[in-house]
Length: 171
Figure 1: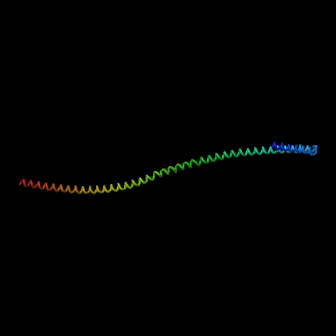
Figure 2: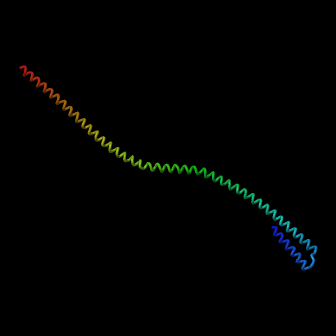
């Protein structure tokens, strides 16, 4: 800005010296016009500087507001992420637990099926042995009954023989 002003002054003084060398004398009118042009130029320069400062201040104010809004947006974004993250983390934890339980369930299910088959086989074997036992007990009861009958008959025969021996002895 200042350089521009100096350059203009130098040009004007060059014009003045040029007009001096051209005419040889500088008229008061030319001098007045030069001073007037110079003061108008300086006034315009000052007005431009003022407007530049005003614009700069407005831009700075806008930048300040933009920075504040950016910070507010960042804070809001963080709050939203904080709200969403616990749910995501919780869902992820629950899914991992479900996967772990599924991995544990598969062999347990297979073991359970194997044990059920073994249980059915053992129950079937138990029932067969139980039937065999019942049959044997029934047979034992029959045999006992036969043995009891046989012993009764032997006792009867012994009694008869004993009576016969006594009758022979007595006779």
